[in-house]
Length: 475
Image (cartoon, rainbow, N blue to C red; front, side, top):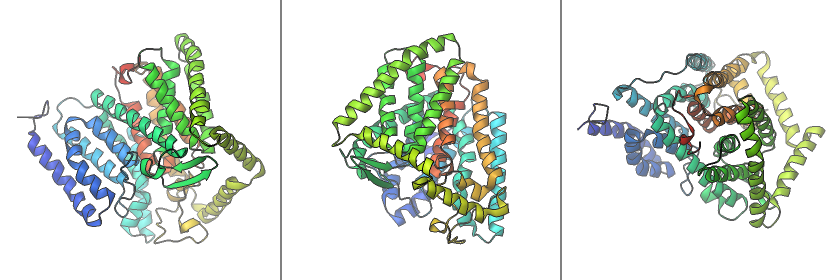
């Protein structure tokens, strides 16, 4: 018996996959903890999905890497080896399996995107060897900067796996369902209706009146799904799936507001503006649909946010959101609060960086190179966003990183005739949100954020002439 269309015996492939994963299983069991349990339970399922349902496997790995599976906490990892690393390795293995056994022609990565990834990967290697010459041990240097490297590894690997239409649809369905369920859990945890620690696995929880601000790696994916699902609602005609998509958009938008991240409020407003501008340039038909659906979408979101949320809290969560916005404006105008803290931290970092700002300092792990003037002695900090790139790979590295996103957006723009309007509108709105928030947020500069960014770009960019609204169940 051979694998369908592959010409390879399934038992041999299964044995090879399980054997490879077993190399990771042994150390995990030795350390113990949630990761070992997750590997023991998930490896057989993952091997089966990788063979027969690669899209489902990628979607599941994506959620697991962001610790987005309620009641299963995979946050701890094993030493410096994190779930994002496991997900990256698994996706690379699936891509390698596809290249080795699939006989059908494989869609090639666009030339511009290939060049951008290659240049950024080359710059990463140069920075890595600079770090070694500065006396940083190879393991420390690698782990301190491996999140940037994962971008140029994940994009071509995920491209191979998700270029198959069936895999694309399966991955999207898993992400939509998983993020929708997680958003409901997030709302419940934020309002104190359920245990936030059990269902959302926060890294930090802060209380703001009747609302708990929950910091989780899934926040970035919730925002992405909110942007794209809203784009579907406002740019497509109604059909049987419209209520489900509208419910998903409303749920993820409420979860987004309850994140209480002021920088994202501003970047989301800019993203909405960009989305409207792009939608208005896509033809008269889309303009008519946009005019009809935008008002409906706003009504649904308004009812959900101001009605349902208020019923489940002891106070008025909407007032907490408004207070966060007003306090943010006050901090910005007065130069106080978190704004003042970030400005001071920027100044400290630039003073340490000195004339090395074009190339950065390298992957200087704080264990080997401690900077007493910086928090935790590290040149990377989650409060200063893009400085995580400038301090390590320099302004040139940051430019090459952003070039990857720009070339992906350019590819989508060039092939927009092959893509539904919601995808084009959603991509540019989402990229605006991510880039506009980068001065203070680490979506583009953390392992979980980069994994989500890379996979989202691939889902938007794969060449699928038959990509139509049935991919989301909407026409």
